[in-house]
Structures are given as C-alpha cells and as structure tokens.
Image (cartoon, rainbow, N blue to C red):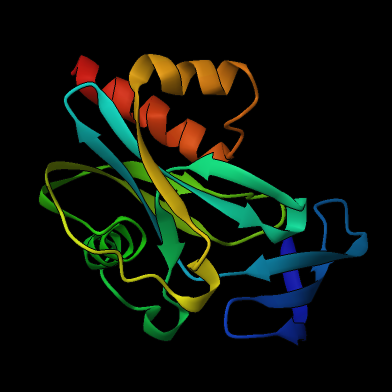
Length: 176
C-alpha cells in the first residue's frame, strides 16, 4: 500500500486523526483513516505474588476498569520510555521502583492507530503519594494476588488489552 496524500481531520493535545489517500497493490485507490497518538508506557508493579492495579472510569466505555498503570505524555512525546514509565507509576500509584525492566513492545490497534508502547516490570517498590493528573482524580489503586488477577481476567472484570498483553510478557519474561 502506498500513501498518495494525507490530510489532518481532527487534532487535540492527545491525538490526531488523519485521512490518507492510498494506492493499493492492485492499482485501486482508497482512503485509510489513522489515529496518531504518542508512545505510552505500561507498568507491571510486582511485589512477590502481588500486582498493583489502578481502577478508573473509561469514558468511551462508560465503565470503570481495572488495569495496570499506563499513560502517555503528549507534551513530552520525545521522552525516553523508561522516564515515561517512572513518571506514570509515580503519578498514578505513588510507587517508586528501585528497578525497572523493559519487558517488550506493544502496538495498541495497528489496523487503525500508530500508537506503540513499552511495557516495564517495576520491582523493589517503595510507597509514596500519588501525583495524579486532573482527569485521574477518581482513580483507585489496590494490590491483587496473581490468582485474584487471573480470576478477574476470567470473569471479565479485567478486559484492557494492553494489561492482558503485558501480563503475557511478564509470564514469558519469568520463563527465561
């Protein structure tokens, strides 16, 4: 597929939507809509057998959801992924990690978005005060055992695709 042209359809501080004119392999023309968002970091805080999760209201779903701490920094789109992970962990949970291990890369929705993110394992944790953004004021945090976490996945209480993929990266990392 070849991009012929591109136009911005919408933009705010967190995302840009563009429409690209494309040329397909068979010579036919079409359009492709793309959501561009800055890179994100997702953090798996692990203390022994316990995982630290955040619960917040997710406006597009009109639901509160449990997930691993994660986020972007549009005003610092060129930040190093580790720096972003440290910031997100501190902001959302108040936790400070003595050790951050890069577990891998995730693509959010490669059929419609350019957003990619790095997953980090946070260990040697110390508790501090959260430094939440205004949109995160109703966020809750809690520790869950792995058995509780897996039960929440099985029951549909945890459905965040990035959190599920991050847990898979954690399991693969532990097998090495």
